[in-house]
Image 1 (cartoon, helix red, strand yellow):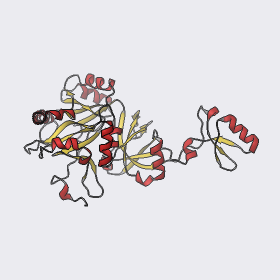
Image 2 (image 1 turned 180 degrees about the horizontal axis):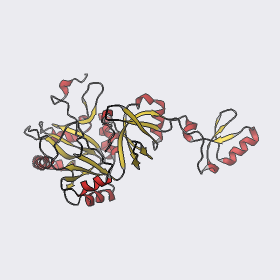
Image 3 (image 1 turned 90 degrees about the vertical axis):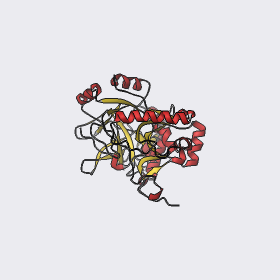
Image 4 (image 1 turned 60 degrees about the horizontal axis):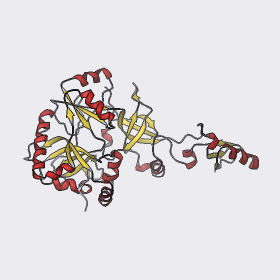
Length: 366
């Protein structure tokens, strides 16, 4: 049965509020020291709103215009939270001792496969870091973060009173208002992702990224971008493994060959003539090279801001065979820094972001 807007549990579509990044190191130092901000731990998972126990991604479906629902992938979470039909929570679905890729492999699968994978690897958990509506139906988005956090803690106590075992897969995020930089450094040292610096008196603006409200602080620069194209692979191999390199091309016939190293290549020339050159594996396989990525600027125009590598071979092959499946989709990249003209230095692919809408991938200029 095709989904209709009547299937969505709210009168208006609700999208989580986003965070931004600040490139100005001086400004970041001020924020770290400011008593106006709290540091809330970030978790390496996927963002979901729980609306009465139904789990919705921030990704909006092109087919029906509704946030993508994944409730059937997490029935153990739904069994707890469906008892509070008016409660709306904001948090991260994550895998204990796992990462965002593990979460995507579960939440991005069909329900049957999602359950099968959780039975094998362990069930996902939900860490909650904000509340939009309480169990009595009172909206809280117009209240400051510090008040929402206090109410969230009270609501969590209520849930645990009703179901003590809920703590197995439900928890609240860790935060601090003092020594935020030290808190962040401890998280990074143990392999955590970082923190979100939250304005204590900041309101919750669904679907928005209010400036100076929530600010991401990670060990590396990361950004969500839109796949906008592909570059062909580099043809000639110029690395240091020439003595054992396996991929070659006959420059006279254009034939691509598998030969076990430079010595075998020389033997091939002696026996067959011709001229050989070492070529990259991706050129030999006929796969794509780098992925072009873009972000929307302040006028809503998609602007190309870089090319990235670091893509696993199975994904690279699928991108090659099904490019239209990926053009316009979101992914996350990491980089050393961002230049003044908006391009990323030494970007690397981190993961696909099926939970994000392309319009959310915007250039942060400040």
